Amino acid sequence: MHTLHRPLRLAAVFLIMLLLSGVLLPQAAFAADAVKKTTNDTVVTTASINFRTGPGTKYSAIEGGIPAGATLARIGTNGKWSLVVYNGAQGWVSTKYVKAAAGNAGSVAAAATNKLPTKKERDKLTSEAVKAFKAQYIHAGMSDYDKANAIFSYLYNNVAFQDDQSNEAYKTNFGNQAYAALVLKKAACSGFCKAVTQLCGAAGLKSKHINAGKWKHQWNMVKIDGTWTLMDAQGGYFGNGWLPMYRQFYGNFGY
Image (tube, rainbow, N blue to C red; front, side, top):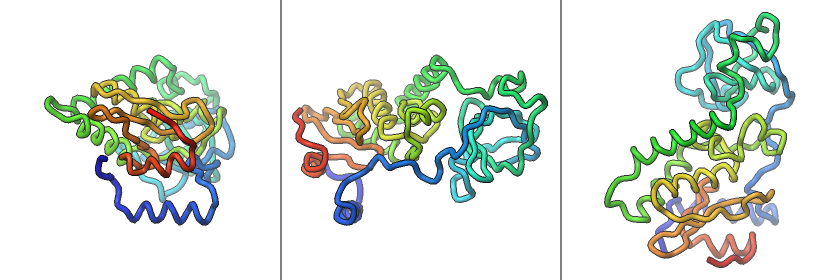
């Protein structure tokens, strides 16, 4: 059995949640950071502003921010915050610092580079992210466990959880795709799993995507030194010590 990556106190918190709720719901219903109103217009920044991972100052700012005079495609709002696309990435800006662009149409030429990326563009960016991860974290002579741990640690420590989960939401936040985890750094459990699949493939590890395509919590099993090992990069669980709990709440499965 491989050692557990997370502190045991997290297990206690997890069990308390189970006792209080009576059921495990890792894939939460729509949270406060969901888009409250869908839009399709173009705005221009009136000052240099922060580009945040959620609608509020409590959310972290994405490095670099957005300069004054940038033209953005706005795809949704939540109170005083707007969800925009900038340089192919999605994030939130304060509506106070944007104004309607001339013509106020999503097709404004100046905003062309900030429209939602096509599947081809998303696939290209995802592929580049996988190659960059491999070059930085996967090295000759690494054991299967070290490779798997590198994958788990990278995703768990660098990717936020996407609470806004629905077929409609996925049209703009791409939360159920590897692109969301590896490029946007915010994904649903399904997006985490697809990222694990791609990173494992690049690292030469076999993996399985559990509950793929279902509206249930999803995770991976990764083959480490001949043993199928649980990896839930979104939930933060790595190691077969967690298998009894997963079998209890998600049903028996064999590998």
